[in-house]
Length: 316
Image 1 (cartoon, rainbow, N blue to C red):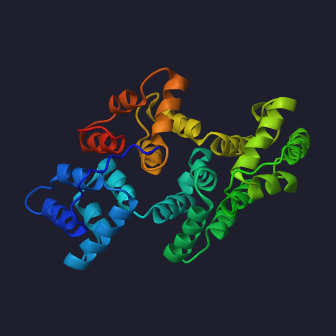
Image 2 (image 1 turned 60 degrees about the horizontal axis):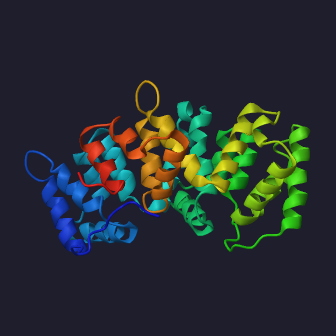
Image 3 (image 1 turned 120 degrees about the vertical axis):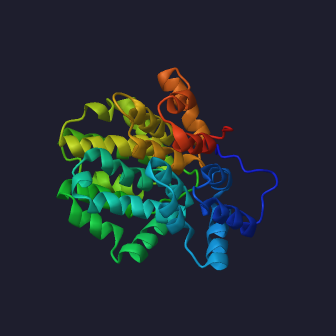
């Protein structure tokens, strides 16, 4: 349930390219035109605009956007303009190569999100894009950038290819819930059984396993063991079980307290605007008893605010 609104009549990619090129000319940039065009085009339309822009003007649209815009507005527009697989590959690489960021468990949630809330084919596309962009495999960089328990867990998630159809086995769910329980009791969250279950089973089968676990045992929230690994495991379970709740929490955390975490807010909105942001909005209200849109727009301003509002499906 996407939130972006594509007009009934959409100009051709060449016309959109001309509008964007005109927005870059003169003494100042026409930010409203950029928002109006890119903020109301779906993935395939944005791709055709980039191709057309390159063909007509001999320049890369992403480069021009990066040069003409600034701040959080620029970051948000550029992320949105990227092909989704390239966007995710760049997000992961930025975390793994930034010595400060990779030390923060909070930033590792990006790898969990991409691995557990996207389709198997998208995850393969991310891995291919990563290899093409950075001359290294995603798994290799995770393994070389992080300590062993975390690297082992995240490599398993990032290299998974899950069966997508709604097919489950209740008996397998009960057995594997018991295997998870045993690993938790023994403080072996990186046990091969845990990684096998989380890295090979379909989303639907895993949800069945989580139901069996909650029915027979306490929640994973109270499990002992390595704190960082436990946090990533809990995050993975939430992303698999109810991704809309995870992203509602990401949005909430990004605007709570002193200051706004614009990077996290942008990532959540951009990543889900064409997937399930309407459901994220509903879960946000259920969890926090307030409007997500109002909470976001009351915390940000300027062109950045206008662009985020557009992706949320509202008129500026």
